[in-house]
Amino acid sequence: MMTPEQLSQLRILIEERIVELEESIPRLEERVAPVAPDVAIGRLSRTDSMMNAGTVGLALKDARERLTRLRNRLKRIDDESFSLCGLCGKEIGLDRLLAVPDRGVCKACLQSVSRR
Image (cartoon, rainbow, N blue to C red; front, side, top):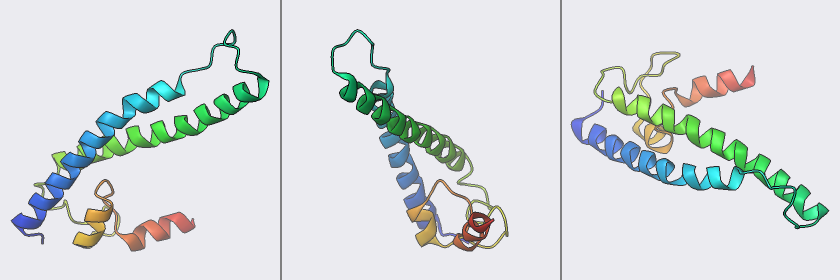
């Protein structure tokens, strides 16, 4: 069971990460904008811009998903099950929660799911 101090530490961390993502998502959205065909940047530069937009698009998708997970975790932070793994039900260590606060899964279960 987590102490009130640990929960407070996690709450602050999650809130900080939410703010960071809310600030970075608009910047990523700007970088994903398509390059207009009438802009004279050259064929190779256009191809490079499109590839960069694809990469940034993946980063944007990941940022949005993390933001959603963090918001959901923050809503549940006062639940008794907050620090329990969503798969095996065992306690997730504070170090793991601090490292990856948007995941409600212990390291062992995450590795097990990743192998499948």
